[in-house]
Image (cartoon, rainbow, N blue to C red; front, side, top):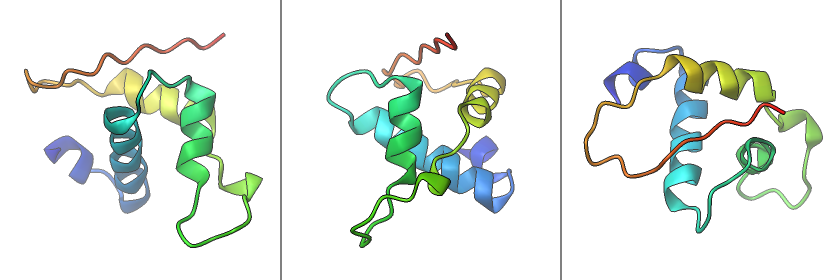
Length: 81
């Protein structure tokens, strides 16, 4: 979490939200599903496509982040196809 908090606020918020979705999902999420989940705004009744983060942003973040906590029991697999 220290590495996440050391990033700029926007990336910190995105990373925290992504990890929350990943940890609490009932099944593994595809990257595009995670992107759409991250675009949901609490309290809004309409879905705004402009809020969907780029898959490349998530791929970049996950490819440069190391999870060192031994209790992190979520497997992150990225399929860029």
